[in-house]
Image 1: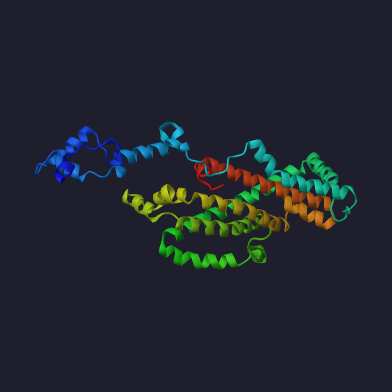
Image 2 (image 1 turned 180 degrees about the vertical axis):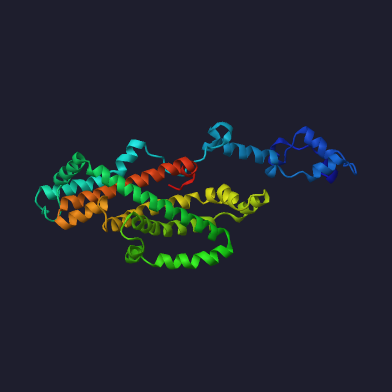
Length: 340
């Protein structure tokens, strides 16, 4: 057979992949037209194995087989990274589990005789003296006297510490003038100032309030200073661009931004004030929880001593709950951004 015969012979069905449809054969037999867009696109077309249609079909089949395609829109809802919040009743039970276990151990130790009453009074004896103080009205008077002294001291010391912290945090000159003195003051225990304050103010109410204020000014200054220094500088510059300066800038922008640190400082100030309250009420006082501690020490009444310790513990718990309530009201967004 000549070459012309081979070229003109039609393809047989047994030729496998080389076989083509009549339309394809006619297209192959047609002579190319120079400059034709159809011929150019046909020549530039990718092979069948890498065709976009086939690739998209394969991708679609893989997506259809994935679990995410089962949801509407082909998107899987994001997983919640945090831990679910407990119910209020469960959270309260968890918080009170350890204190209740300590009370149970105390009750069992004193009731079984493992702990002598001279060493540690039992819960029954403590409840007895508590009822005695409530019946005579002394407990209410002592609590009011201590609350008045602690409140005035924390208000004065906390206010001064907040003012100094804001000034030192906002101004370089204020930091240079205030911070070295406050750092030296923090290194001096406030109890070491008791003899000096007695010589200055006597043993009356002024001495007690000043001692508590001095104890509270240090933590408030330190946390306020750190909170103000942590405020974004761009936020302060933007506020100044809108004309906020001086007290308006501090009250409207700086203090609200540094509020988490300030509330933490307030919590610590109230706790430290209880320590200052004990020291203040043991000198020249006729009422107050610290005065009750002094009486228990003089007469070796362990039941009164344990009662005073429990009163201070309950006061600390109430202070913590009050600050937490203020945090929820003033900063409701913190519960959604905290990593728990």
